[in-house]
Length: 192
Image 1: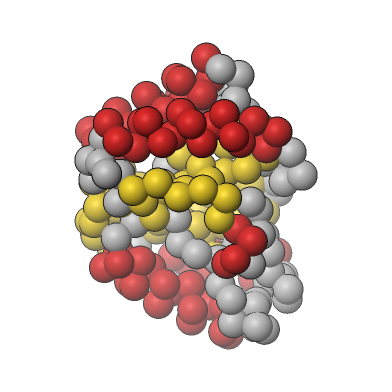
Image 2 (image 1 turned 180 degrees about the vertical axis):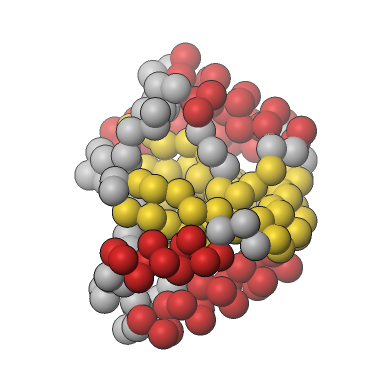
């Protein structure tokens, strides 16, 4: 089982999906967020796919590795097909499941292997990692959805199909914050 992130000790390694996928997913995120006034300042969590977590004290070393890996790979194909309900730290989250396309699987495993060898990745059992795009969650919400209502939304949407595909062209290291200026530590264009 994957342990919950330690926000004070870890950074996130994320892929940014192409605009067409993001726009569709953002519509659902916006409807629920506005209904519950989750983010009164209208700064929503940026939609992304977390592919690894790293020790924040080793971010500079991770940057060197990621700079080289990003050059090795071209665009990463991203496919989603259905909403799912997952539970982290006792709370449900509504996510879009991300299929493990050959390019995503090869890329993520190559990065994780190298980060693990250098003791940078904080994920011990990567084979259990589930690629997803979080749509609705109480993490970072100023006005969290009551747990029973979040569970209800999640279970209502679970299994609804919404097949989409796009390419990720950007790999980034993020701090755990909504602030768009503070969040990005490093950004790498894939295949550049």
